Length: 501
Ligand code: ADP
Image: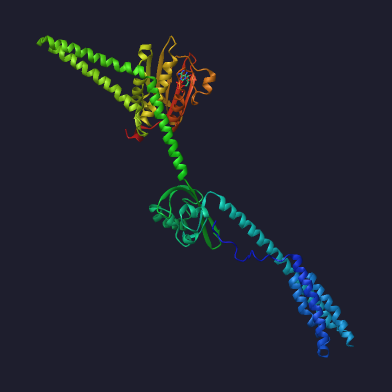
C-alpha cells in the first residue's frame, strides 16, 4: 500500500532503553542533591531552617519524572539527610516541620513519577505493537494480488494500494481526493454517486459484502473486467469503504481460449466422425448419382427414338432424375452443416427433428447391416434450448457407436427414446442390442482416448460429455439386462410457453 508511515516516530532516533533512562535519572538525583547541599552552604545565613528543603525539592521532582520511584526516593533521602546535617553543622536546631513536609511531598512526587513511568512504558509498548501490526498489515497489503482502494462515504479516494496504482494507472498522490468514479467506465461512473447515496440513506446493500463482476477503467480510458467487493468500516462519526478489486482480464482470456480450443476439438471430432464414415457417405451419394445417370441415359435413348408417344415416360424419367439430384444435394447440404465450423449458439429446437436429422447421417450404411430402428418421442418434451449441430453430434456419436457394437450381433435393434426425466430434464436414450460394455471399459468410458476399437480414437464419448455438460445436462451408460447397452443424456426442459412456441 502506498500509505505513509506513522509520522510521530522518527526511525533515525532510537528510543532510550529503560536502563539508560534510570541511570540518567539517578545521576540527576545525586547531582541535584549535591547541588542543593552546595546552595545551602552558599546561601548559608540567609536560609530559613525549614525553607532550605525547597532547594532539594526540584531535584526530587526531576528525578521522579525521569526515572520513577527509585531516583525520586534517592533524591528525597539525600535531601532529608543532607539538609539536617547542614542545619546542625551551622548550629541551628533540627528542622522537624520542614523535614516532615519534605518527606511527605517527596513521597507523593515519587509515587506520581512512578505512575508516569508505568503509563509511559505502557504507551511505548502499545505504540510498538501498533507499529508492528501496521507493518504486518502493510506487508500483507503489498503482497495480496487484489488491488485496494479506500474511500470516504462520499466516494472520495483516501488511499490506493500499490497493486491498485499499477492496475488503474493512477498514482496514490494523483488519485487521493478524486471521486472513485474515475476508475469506472460510463454507465457505472454515472450511477455510482446515486448508489452510494442510496446506501447511505437506506442501508440497502447492493455490493457491500456481496461482491460482483463489474467493469473498471484504466487511466488511459481502456476498460477491463474486474471482481469488486466492498467492505465498510464505521470510524465513530465517519464511515469508510474499502474496495477490493481483482482483475479478471487474464481469467476471461483463458476462459475464452479454453472455449475456443474446446469448440475446435468438437469441430475436429465431427470431421473425424465424418472421415470414419467416408466410404458409407460415398456410397450414400453414389446411389442417387447412378440413378440420375440411369434416368438420363434412358431419356437420351427415348429422345433418339423421337417417338412422341414416349414423351410422358421421358418427362417421368427426367422428374425422377431431378428428385435424385435433390436427394444427393440434401445429403451434401446436411454434411456441410454438420462439418461446418459454425457459431456455437443455443436456440430453441424441436428435439425429434434434430434427432431425426442426425440419425439420417448416422444410419447411412446401417440399413445394409439390417439394423432396425424404433423412435419414440414423448410429445410433452420436444422443445429444448440447444446448440443444434452439437447435440446432433452427440446423437450421431451414440448412434454410430451403437451400430458398431451390433456388427457381430444376431439381433440388431436400435431404439431412440425422448421422454421426461426428473427435475425438469428431458432424457434422450439410445439403446442397442450389441456387445454391451465390460466393467473395465464402463469405469473409464467417458475418458479421452478410451477405445476398444482397432481404428478408434476414443474421443467421441468424452466430447459428448463436454457438449452435454455445457448444456447443463448429464450423460451416462448402462448395460441392458437382455444384452446391449443404453446411453442416456439429459437436457434441461424448456416449456412451450417459455419458448414462445
Ligand atoms: P471410439 O468410438 O473412437 O472408440 P468413443 O469415445 O465413441 O470412441 O467410445 C469409446 C469406447 O466405448 C468404444 O471403443 C467402445 O468400447 C465403448 N462403447 C461406446 N458405445 C458403446 C456401445 N453402444 N456398446 C458397447 N460399447 C460401447
